[in-house]
Amino acid sequence: MTLKPSHQPICRILLAEDDDSMRGFLERALAKAGYDVIAFPNGAEAFERLKEEPFTLLLTDIVMPRMDGIELARRASELDPDLKIMFITGFAAVTLNNDSAAPKDARVLSKPFHLKDLVREVDRLLAA
Image (tube, rainbow, N blue to C red; front, side, top):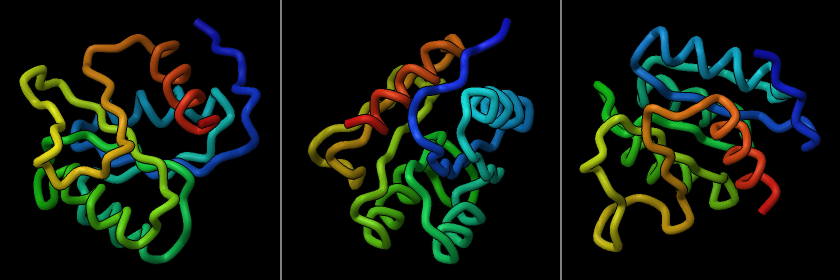
């Protein structure tokens, strides 16, 4: 399957996903869609990189070792209030509510999802 490159300007995506195969899959798919993607296996390493340079979007799994995605998103939005955030999760029971520490404008995409859906949701969030 070939995806057409996104029509959005080049955006930098910080990806945090602890599953190696899923991380590689997401990184390749987003790069083929025209995004500049930097990927890490956990929230702690992703946060360290975020402190060094700016990104347009944080795409993070919720359940990860060392630092979960919600904590990563909370800390990231303190560093950069304009950073857009999207969570990906395989846990259908995990929801973000008003009591969670997650940023209020964050989006959630539940696994499994189709590649087209991921790219469409990323395009939509970055265009907002």
